[in-house]
Amino acid sequence: MNRMLSLESIRHCLEGLVPSGVATCGLDGMPNVTLVSQAMYMDPYHIALSFQFFNKTRENILANPIASVLMMDPDTAARYRLTVHYLRTETSGPLFEKMRAKLAGIASHEGMEGVFVLRGADVYRVLNIEHLPGRELPSTQYGPPILPNLRRCVDAINRYCSLEHLVDSLLDSLDRYFDIRHSMLLMLDRAGNRLYTLASRGYSHSGIGAEIPLGTGVVGVAAREQVPIRIMFAASEYEYSRTVREQAIKDGLVCELEAAIPMPGLPSPGSQMAVPLMCNGKLMAVLYVESPQPCQFGYDMEDALVTLCAKVGEAMGLLQLQTQGGQNMEASPAKPCPQPGSGPALKVRYFARDHSLFMDEEYLIKGVAGAILWHLLNVHQHKGRCDFSNRELRLDADLPLPDISDNLDARLLLLSRRLQERSEHIQIEKSGRGKFRLLVKRPLTLSQSD
Amino acid sequence: MPPQPSVQTLDPAMVAFITSHLSIHMAAANDQLQVTLVRGIGCRVSDNRDRITVLAPRSQSEPLVRAIGRNNSVAAVFNQPETHRTVQFKGTDARIEPATEQDKASLPAYLQGFSERLKIYGVKEIYIHTLCACEPDDMLAVSFAPMSIYQQSPGAEAGRRLPPGAPLP
Image 1 (cartoon, rainbow over the protein chains, first blue to last red):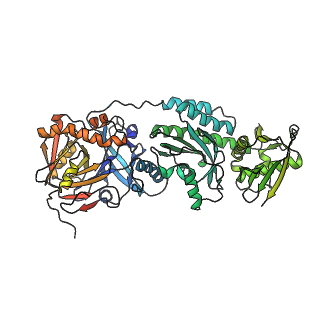
Image 2 (cartoon, chains in turn green, orange):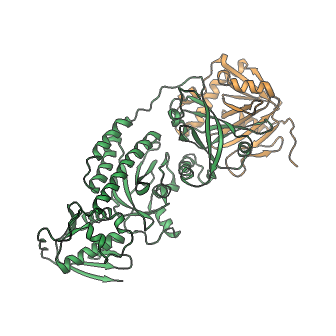
Image 3 (tube, rainbow over the protein chains, first blue to last red):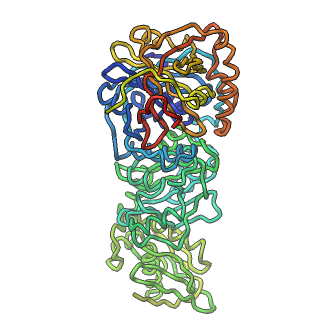
């Protein structure tokens, strides 16, 4: 391979913006040539081509694995001819899903939804790259420089002192340094097989608490496959919308999904990307970014966000260890609870079957966060306490919820933000590491139903 | 019984289609079954409709020229970008010819026509004029009698061989 020309340096030709030509040859020596909807960069030595139809190309590569791919630079019109060697076809898993999502965008862009259906991702090793002679345009790709801005994001995130600060720093940095105006962070609910929105930027409603099942939409697929998913054009199949969630519920993909809090999101994003946040090989959360414009997030931006999310994922894991590490105080009030104000009692109603909680008949939250708040309000009402520790919650047998220790900080943050949005009379605020205070500003009437 | 290879007289609609400034790719393979391809920059069909000639820049076609010089086999695919209608032709008597003055003079019309087709995708005219640019002295012609034709539009029918003289699929 030409030492001066790496596959990595021309990977923007593999975004599916200009269809590539693919030539193969049968054992009878007869060539075959066709266009391929999608050629995708995998790593410096491999590309994947979309396998959509059983045809002569398929027959030929199974008999003679050497093929030639002609791809064009979508910016400069430079032409590159690749000699490639077919290795295998993947019909499920991360590569397949990555390609399937991307193809859905291409199909939608080209009016071929329902026709462009991925059967497999054909993996090829690149043996040679030939830069063909001919006229070329000057490059016009002048986005914000990725590396210095990535550095600025990392600098901002490094100053985190809590999960709340970490999550806010991440989304604010994306806006400030990468001009990404629409973003959200969704935490994994491992037991519930779903993700819930913890923070968002750029939407008319925050959608904090809104849920999406694993495997649904760009976010759900990125989480299930633990792989970044990036789509360059509007793709209705992957729109992160209420419709997708409702369909998933209808299909029985997940039950008891939070349905009362609408999902934030652009109605028809032109570009989308979802990046998993991992810690020690375990999924923690998913970062989702989108833009109304197509072609906003390329390979370089994907690299930047994957790097950033690796950092944030580790920080999340560290915070979790710290709050589980027994350095928290035992439950004892640090200072007297403020007296609830006067006025009519706030009616709080709790339904044990789904842990949903209503305040003055207005829905607040359900699930783990609902059960936690109900517990806190009861302790406050009957024992007069307002200071709590994460540790006591984790150890409390009255909270019969699975997997609670896994992401308690995130649950409390979700609860705190949901209260900020929906209730003037009950608030949760952090009072120290692993400690928090429940502020109740009106008398309470608590009632429980099945 | 599969149709036997025979020289075909192309349906007039097929001729009109492949000469309507489409996206063209042409491929050939050497004796070691290593295949190569190049982008075409124009097409003409003989008056009796039994021979296709595809134009290409010689400077980008060296492996293709060598392969055709050895075995005379060629494949050419024509794609209408805005409809995805695609047809492939194969021949076994391909020969490299110098481009005629008419071929050279046909390039501006090809660039203009192909650019028009891609406007719906937001592709700028200058992009196509650059992608398909060719100095007159650099142009070559690959001429062949179509021995087989394949419907290649995306879908379940992709790859289906068409009968001789078949209308445009």
